[in-house]
Structure formats: structure tokens, C-alpha cells
Amino acid sequence: MLNESLVGGSAEPSIEQGESSDTIVPKVESSETIKVESSETIKVESKDGLGPKIESSPGVEAPVSKDSDKKQYSLRSKDKKALEEEKKLQQDQLNKSLLKQKTHNVIVQSRLKPVPFKHLDLYNFGPQQPQISPAFTIGDKGFYQTDDHPFNRRGFKYKPCQPNPIFKSNLYSTTDLSPFKVRISHFDRSNGIAFNKDLDTVSTNQGWRSVRSNVPIREGKYYFEFNIISANDPSTKGHVRVGVARKEASLEAPVGFDGYGYGLRDLNGQKMTLSRPKEFMSLKNDSDLQNFKSNDTIGFLIELPDLKKHREALQRFVNEKQSEKPVKLDESPAKKKRKTKKESGHYDEFKFNLHDNILRDQIPIKYKNALYYEQFEYTPTKQMDHLLNPVTVFGEKAILEEQNNLIHSSQNIPKIPNSKIIVFKNGIEIGCMFEDLYSFLPVKFDDDLIEETISNSKQDQNSNYRNTDDGSLGYYPMLSVFLNGIVGLNPGPDFKYPIKDDLVKPLSDRFDESIVEEWMWDLIDEIELEYLDSFE
Image (cartoon, rainbow, N blue to C red; front, side):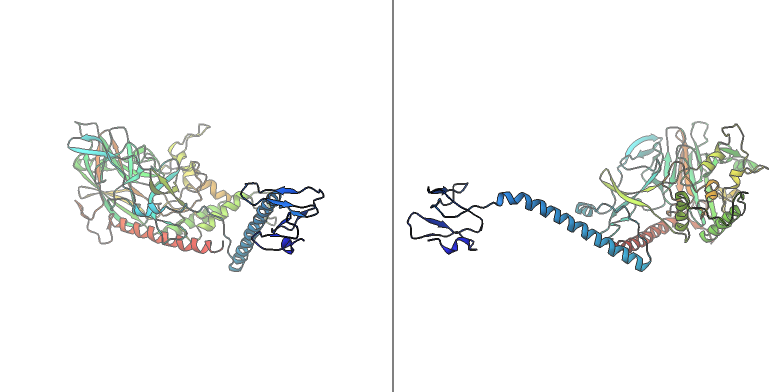
């Protein structure tokens, strides 16, 4: 007699004895059976040999499980189903994001998100200080160098950063290296530059090498001093040049080598820009003021209008250039020109600068187990290079702007109105060295012609530059040394020869201002990115 539990749902197999003592019926889960036609008894053993031996009598349906055959098909179906569910979930999220963007009238572009920091980075709080190593000694002064950090070169620049658990989108924030003051930059210097432990005095045992300070001057009146320690001395071959320069100025040449910097020579007190010396200190009747040498102090007073007036002057410059745009005879005003991809990119850049935005495209990286922000650096442009090397491929010679006939390229370089550099020697005013300095700000333009004329709109060495201001633009104090020349930077507030002007601030104030600016833009970037990430 067949037990009714043969097709039952019990989880535990039960074996019961029927009318015949030779018949044993197992109770299993599977409902699939096989008809046994033979009169011989069939013995079924488990594969592992651990289960009970089961015998079936003639005419009894013995259950056989086919789970091994089904497993392959079930796995495929599960993977396919999971993939479909994942695609559906992604599509739903995309639809929700697009709907939210449409509701809020916002277009969100995908961005490169920073790699999350490790917990170990939190324990190593603060930036890793570069390790200094002795370079050489001049007299009783020792000079050092560092090489365990990146340098600003090849279209990239760097600054230290640290993990910030409060920032949910940026994950990192800007920090700085000690000493915390206006000093020479760790990153913005030539490899041949050596410095003292206070990072305020530099020298080199090579040819001309330069270094910039760690903060720029963007607006206002600031005063600082250069301490000439060893230069223009008959007993040595060392020389120095001092001045101010922009980010694009070469660090493997003295200040004033190109149009991005304005320098002063020690040998005969000539002023330099575009590698063209002009008489300056030598015009003084007093022979003591006609140059500078060891133990002299050269003071620089930089006057720049506020950024609002600077930008207004740039806009007037662009309006003039647009009014001078030649009109083609075959161009019909009624016919709409199709906007190309290139022109669309110009319009996007125009919108970035429309509200004087500070746009910092920066990504955290790890270099020798230390964290840094990597950004695109500002590089020289074709127009400024043409001023430096005015010989064209046809042998035509360009004429500098200061001469009577102004060339087209020099006319298309915007300047900062009411800007000037005043020089002092040992507390005595020498005079105005340069005025109407070249503008360092990006120009708002949405015209294809403007790109070909504005000097700081297109950079040949950096195709990813988007004609924006990242907050680092401005004029930096720049120190250049040659063959054991030694010069130091004194940003104040304790000057050897202070000037009496309540409107003039010491350059040392720029450090606190720059730190506050970096923190402010860190917070603004985080708020903006948190808002944009909410649409994902």
C-alpha cells in the first residue's frame, strides 16, 4: 500500500512500512516521479553515501530530483532579472533627476567626483611638510631645497589640501604649509632655486632662476621690500633682479624677460619688460641712486584699482573691439548663422564670466603619500609671445607699443587703468617704474573674432583652459638670482624703510586675506555641489 505522504510537503523524509515487508517508501519534496516497469527491486543510494538506502518494488513510482539540471537555468534567469531590475532602477533615477531639473529650471552636467579619502588620512590631519635637504652654502648662509612635492609646470599647478568630513560632496578642503606667512612658494619656483629655512631668502649656483611669492596682489595698494644681500659686487659674479610678475611668467628666466613681468636690474638700475631694458635709476643725478648692490633695500609700492573698476575697463575694451569688427559684404543680417560647437563653447565661457565667477577646477591627488589639489595653470599666449619675439615667419618685424606706430597685436592687449609700480631705494623714492600694467583678468566675450585678438583668451599650451578666473590671478612679487646672488623678501609689517601713507597696506596682510578667500570659496563650492548632487 502506497503511503499518502509520498507527494506531501514535509521537509524531513519519513520512511514507513506498508503491507509488504519488502516495500519501503520515501517521503521527499519533489513531486516528479519515474515509473518502474521492471519486476526487479531497484536500489537507490544517495551520491555521498551518507543517506539511507531506498528500495522500490515493482510498479512503484520512485521520485528523482532534477535540481542539478535546473540550477544552471535558474542562475541565468536570476542574473538577467537582476540586470533588468538594475537598468530599470537607473532609468527611474534618471527620469526623476530630469524631472527635478526641469521643475527647477536647472541643467546638471556630470562631474568628476573626488576619490573618497581613507580613514588613515584623517589621523594624518594637516598637510605633510616637505622635507628640506641641504643644497649649498654661501659664506655663513646655508640654503636648502625640496623635491618631495609637485612643482607648477607643464600646464598644471598644485596646492595642499586635507580631508574634510564635513564636506559631503567635495570631501576635501584647502590648507597651507608652514611657515604661515607671505613667503616664497614651495610650488611656484624653479628647481634651481635654493632657500633658507624661513623661506624668505633665495639663491642659486646656476644661471638665472626665479621664484614667486605664495600670494598675489589683485587690487589695492601694497608695499614690500627686497633685501639685497649679495649682488652687483666686483668680488663675486652674482646678480639679482626684483619685480612683480603674473602666473604666466617663466621661472627659468629673470623677471622682465617676457611681457608678464616687470623687473629692475641691479647692474645699472634699468627697468625691464619684454627683455628690453630702459633707463630708470640711471636718470637720477645722485650716483648712489643709479643702481643697487649688496646691503641695499629696494621698496616696491604696487597700486591696482579695485576689481570692479578693473572689470568695467575690460568691458569697455571688449565693446570697442566689437565695434571695430569688420563687416563682410556677403553677410546678410537677416540670415541666421548656425552656431558651431566652437562658438557654443565661447558662449559657455562667456556665461562663466558673466557674474565675475571664481571657477576653481581642482581635483585632489596623492603625491608621495601627501594630498594636493591639482589645477590647470595659466600659460603664455600667442599674442604675448609675439611681443617678445616680434619676427614673423615672413620676416616682418613687429613694432612695440611704446613706439609711434602701434601694431595690431599690441593694441589688442587690455591694460589696467590707473595701475602703477613705484620704486624706492633705501627709503628714497626713485619714481614710477611702470604704469598701466597689462590686465590679468579673463575677458568676457561671446564673439569668435575676440578670441583671435584678446591676449589672455586662448592658451596654446593648455587647450583645457576655459578663460576663467580661479582666484590665483594677479601680480606676484618675483625674485630672480644669478650665480650665487642672494636676495630676500620682506612683506612687512616691520619694514626697514616704512612709507607714510595710511592707504598703503603691508604685503603681509595679503596672507590672511588669501586664507579667508580660499575658505570662502571652499564653502561656496561645497554648497553648490551639494545642491547639484541632489539632482542625481
